[in-house]
Length: 139
Image (cartoon, rainbow, N blue to C red; front, side, top):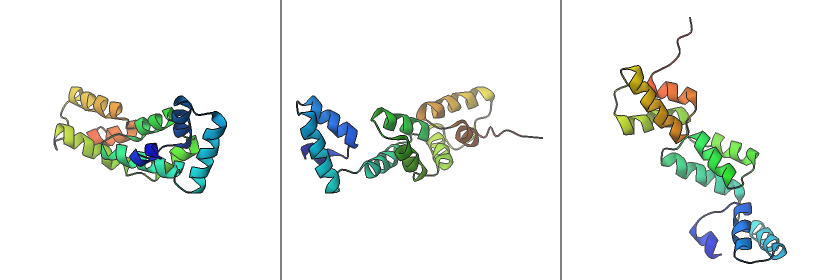
């Protein structure tokens, strides 16, 4: 309960923490089942809160998804949480403006620099092109 008082955990992540502290696997599974039954442990809620927190900090869906996978979240759970997240294109534009100012980059070197920053933050190439004003013109 002390672990859950600090933040939400995914079921697998909490199980690993308990096993690392020396609890037996059978006892850990029983405790996790009881927590799920009491709605104190909810993987979907945890994933949604994780996405909201990371998006608020300016991270994109690719990076957030990778971090959730590293914590042991199921792919379907990750997809649902990311789909319920913010408008990623608008967030990429907002993050770019916050870091580099309101003016769009003038040259390709500056566009590339800003694109690398957004790529590091975890935004897709489509979101990056929209944020930096480098939309492809199809004739």
